[in-house]
Image 1 (spheres, helix red, strand yellow):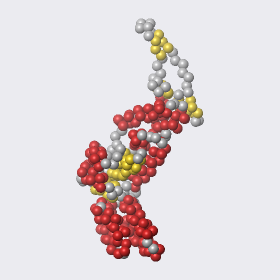
Image 2 (tube, rainbow, N blue to C red):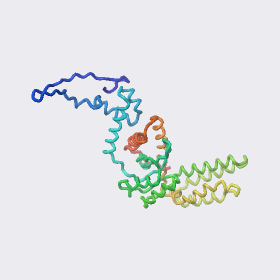
Image 3 (cartoon, rainbow, N blue to C red):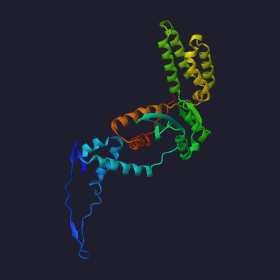
Image 4 (cartoon, one colour):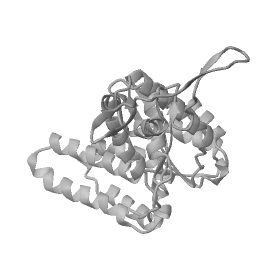
Length: 305
């Protein structure tokens, strides 16, 4: 089999010479090493095409295009990934993002380079022990300056244990989303007359995140908290408790303005890849994501949000 042409499968009929050795009386075929991969029964250029395509496309779609069995496509993909993992080094970032995604009936931990917007790895689970082990194995882990995450205590404990000098920053969008959900829940539970008051409180809370330094943000937050009506204190208690327990990590955002936006967006890409595969193993999904979203891309300027 050879590269498809205009959407049509292409097969080559090759005539090659068979030889007979007069000394040993053995027969052998003319070698075609320069153009044919005899293990896969295809041209080397098709093999290279399959390798590149298998990272981004489903095995079934490639099989239908070129006329090679899907199992063979999977085997080519496996060999290619093994080769890539042996030759590819993922650089430890300055800005590390940690998040999780629930796929294949299990929560998985996602590590990203938030500064350069690249996937670093996707782990089998999100257990503290697994995260600690992974962080401990990172080369040059001391170069990590900032770690963005949601309010997950096991992640925080793991980072504190392995990267004590790194600054932990709670993702701005996570805490804002939490506040928004709390306010909307209150809105549904209260009488119509309170909607205007809640809207004002919501907007004034969101205004906190426009502050350009920690001190202003902290003062503005305390002013907002002091204005909460007595009858709404219990409804806002989960948000206020979270702000208190994670105060240092939440307000660290105003010192460094680093978010986990890329990590959050990556979760939708992982889910899309998983749906597309319809039956990928975790190892296959991890490899496909790692060698599409993990490999170096064209450098774009980082925009603070």
